[in-house]
Amino acid sequence: ELMTALKNAGVDMVQTANSYAVYNGMDGLQLTLQGIHSAGMTPLGTFADTAEFQESGGFFIRQIQGIRVAFVAFTKGVGRGVPPGSEDTVNLLYNDHSSTYQDVDTDFLNNILKSLRKWTP
Image (cartoon, rainbow, N blue to C red):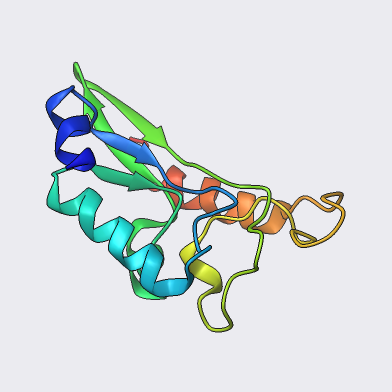
């Protein structure tokens, strides 16, 4: 299986926020996330539901040689759009993610940065 091969090759995290994150709907995203978690890896930028997004703050922190490193991933948009009620499942960089990509969602970015500050000593 691909996920196991990635894990065995030393991959610990997979950036999953991309234009195809919900291409096959929420079922496709759920299967992808399950496969990543089952292999012992961490997905970056996508979440199973709003509760998982809120629990994570939209980011992942890892301790590497005594240093805390924050990882966050975004996509500029998703081709078919995020299904209604699932808006928190993909970190979207733009408010106008289904059209011109001109309006960066600074409120969303700032909220993630504020959440990250909780983790600083």
